[in-house]
Length: 166
Image (cartoon, rainbow, N blue to C red; front, side, top):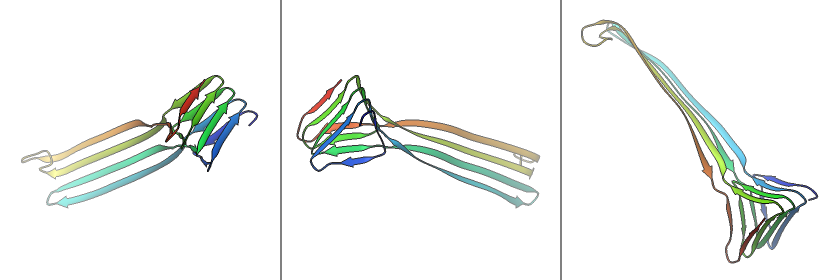
C-alpha cells in the first residue's frame, strides 16, 4: 500500500509466502465483540400481620477483543514508519520478519466487564424489627464493579527464525 494497511479482527492466511508492505503504517488490531444482560425480579409475600417485598437487579456489560491473525508458510511485514500489532497474532511455519522504519509495537488487546448487583428487602408488620415488634425495616445492598483484563498478542515461528527490526 502507498500509505497504510489497516486490519481489524481480520484473518489473512497465505499457503506459501505472506507479504504485507506499507509506505507508512501497518496496523493489525483487535476488533471488539460486546454484549449485555439484565435480570430484574420484584416479588412480595404476605403472612399473618406481615409482608416482605424483595427487589433484585443483576446486570452486566462486557467487551472482548477479537484479534487479527496473519499467517503464512513464511511471512514478511514491512512498514515505512510503524508496525503495530495489538491483541493480534502474526505467525509463520518458517521464517517471520517484522520491520518498521520507526517503531514496531506489539501490545495486548483490552477486555472489560462491568457488573451491577442490587437487592432491596423491605419487611413490614409484626416481627419486622425483630422479636415482638411492629413496624417497617428496609435493607438495600448494591455492588458495582468493573474489571479490565488483557489478551496477549502472539508473534512467532514454528520451525524458522523471527526477525523484528525497527
